[in-house]
Image (cartoon, rainbow, N blue to C red; front, side, top):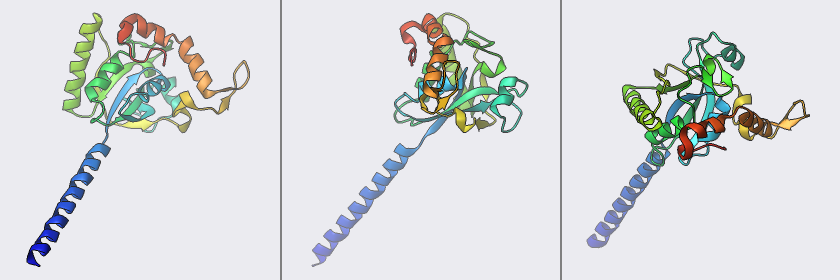
Length: 220
């Protein structure tokens, strides 16, 4: 009887231990990190990175300025100091920050200090925003590696992240929305408008010129 009782106690302890380990594993798997980058039009950056395995969400927004909770119109008009950015939420167990940074450099023109592609002005400059010294060191390292690979000077700065402000709901997931907006050819979906904009802006063409087969999103 004592032996049976001990066996039941041991079995229960093992089951509890297994449940705790399983719960801890689930918690670790569910943890996400964030990376904030500015790569010109945030619609395009969001569309790019939401295709990456391990990225759970990409949110369009603003960072780098001094005006709290800016609107899109304020930012593109100028004077707020903000960049159009995307906050990339990712599972580090599936994709590393280093990999995402490497992909980011190869999805932009990091040699252009005045904007990106057809979008000009301060709001469309490129940048990486770091939340701590460790993130800053890694971003600097990946930038140096990208500059060596490109063979040209990279002007994309690594800046401190003071705050991230999400853009209006209208801008989120713009590239895949099917609601209609007016155009000179009649009403079209936002998805179609986005594709026309991306093609007209020659984003993918310029990225391919710079990075060739290393460009991960050309044609996205």
